Image (cartoon, rainbow, N blue to C red; front, side, top):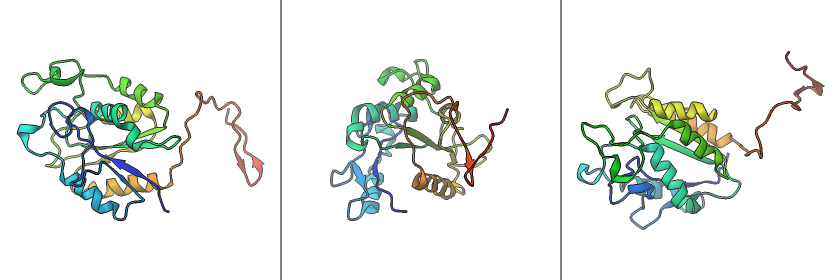
Amino acid sequence: RVVDYQIATTTTDAMVSTISKYGKLIRSTNGVEVVTSQMPNPTLEMADILSNIPLNPTNTSGFEMGLRAAELAITQFGSQFMRPNVQLAVMILSDEEDQSCTAGEGCRGSGGVPANMQISTSYYANFFKIQANAITVYPIVGLPTDNCSNVYSKGLRYLELQKLLGIGMTGSICQNKLDESFQNIARELSGLVCYKLSKVATGGNMQVRVDSGETPRDS
């Protein structure tokens, strides 16, 4: 199936990086920030963007704030990659627990712990739910059952958020499972059609028909 898409990239560093701080979008060498399916070679453009993600520890933060970075990217730069009435899929790739806290450099604490209280996952669930676009979150993180060397800590807050949203799926970031995680999410996205409802559905008027016959509602 042919998919019409737009892809933007930020990092989980929401504090000090001069390139990606506060949810800023990563640019390619040619200045491209949003990769689209209409480009002559979107795969090459995406690879160029990923190669520009900062890796120098002196220019990045030790606190991974994937949820905060997603919020900032949407609120500040969403107009560049979000389209009216089109679902937004947020894929979060992290080998460490989310440490999203209140704001900026005030998050920097001692002993590897953010100074300010973490922002609750229920806050982010509400943030994603109230957006005009339907949003689905796909965390690829350290799962509770993972036991691999490239996971620094389990991504429990990401998993909790995905559970609160009740849609999407999770994947493992373990090196031997990463391809499978990407493939599973890609298959879902290629066939997913999601419509944002004007109000919460009650199911009271729902009917299920099989071979033109209505299936009785369970008691």
